[in-house]
Amino acid sequence: MKKLVIALLVLALATSAIFANGAAEATTTKKTVLNVMSFTDEVPKMIDKYFEMHPEEAAKYEVKTTIIATTNGLYQPALDEALAGGGADAPDIYCAEAAFVLKYAQGDASQYAATYKSLGIDVDKLIKEADIAQYTIDIGTRNGELVGLGYQATGGAFIYNRSVAKEAFGTDDPAVVAEKIGAGTNSWDKFFETAAEIRKKGIAIVSGDGDIWHAVENSSDKGWIVDGKLYIDPKREAFLDLSKQLKDNDYHNDTQDWQEGWFADMKEAGAKKVLGFYGPAWLINYTLGDNCGDTFGDWGVCAPNIGFFWGGTWVLANKDTKNKDIVGKIITWITLDSSDTGLQYFWANGTLNGPDGTKDCVASGTVMAKSNGELKFLAGQNMFDVFVPANQYANGKNLTQYDETINTYWRDQVRQYTAGAKTREQAIADFKVQVADNLDVIVE
Image (cartoon, rainbow, N blue to C red; front, side, top):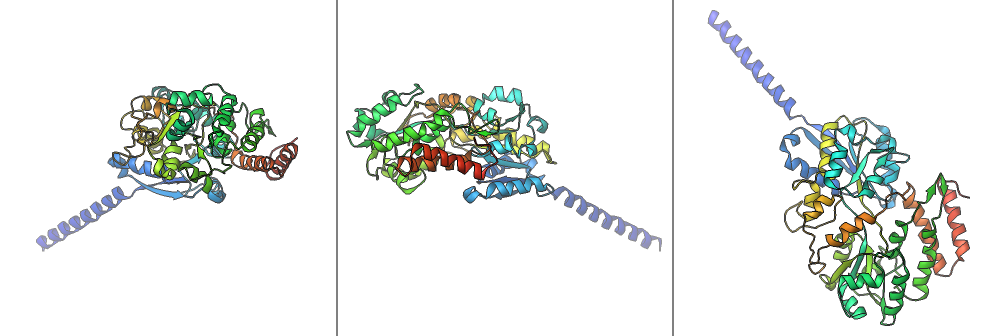
């Protein structure tokens, strides 16, 4: 009997141990959910890479990604609802692009953003080490505290067709093309002189007025809203005249950016050959490169006449996240790590997903200084030689949270004016009515 009791006790203890071990195993394998919200899969894929490189962290967290495209204005309402709703499904990390980032970094929805310092990030030290482009800092700063940073640098340059340049100027030397468009002059005078010169040879200097818009918009001294009131910066108002000058003198092919005619001009399939396009490195990687047809490898890049930036994605964190430690580590790796194993080094050298990937300009000057920016698209030219200085001229202090909407209204009115459908005065008046009727902005 005694032996039977002992046997039963041993069995009970063994069974208890099995269940205990099972419970322990279940506990260790249960992962914390990390919610990520974005409008593309770019940042989610970066986060996947982070966890791939940090398996000890991957064992603790499960990433739940929500991606909603910005088309048809669907992303912002969904993000707003998720942030306001809070709770277990609220995003820990979320993204905002240049067209509306001010809303989340400094504007109506900025109260949800955590400061980077509250995530345990040594902001001042890392910004200095990484030599982060100032405009990305300005955009992501709320009341003197950093709440968002981009990983790209989107300073703009003039990207030109080398064969067309040879036909126009007898050379495709970037220094000559830069001189021809008035690089560094902060003026459109030389640009239009050259437009008239090459028009005689049947060459358009740009595809459409949208090709100069971002240089105009992001070089203005002030944004659309000043002290709560609509403000039309003189440089932006001058876009009416610049656009009309292009159209009246047949200096472009009168296309609209992101439409069929614009893409056709990239492969010399438009009415006239086009000298070039204003844009950042991403325009090469994700637009020109995909639409240039047989002209691939026959392009160059030079300094622009006007310093500007165009686009970019900022990474923010929810102030109510319960996962500040890992969120801080991920955001640091994406935006401030200037080592050879940081996201920006992989991004700059096209090695995020293996060798021979797409190279891009990044926010860290330190990273670009030790990276290889030579591109086959540019006939081997090192794009960083042009884009790194371009980032220093970019201005991040003229954005507002309404830019995406107001820019659409403005450019539509400009097109109607240049087409002869409205007078200059009527176009401006109708623009003001649109803003007054649709936005919470004072219009005088």
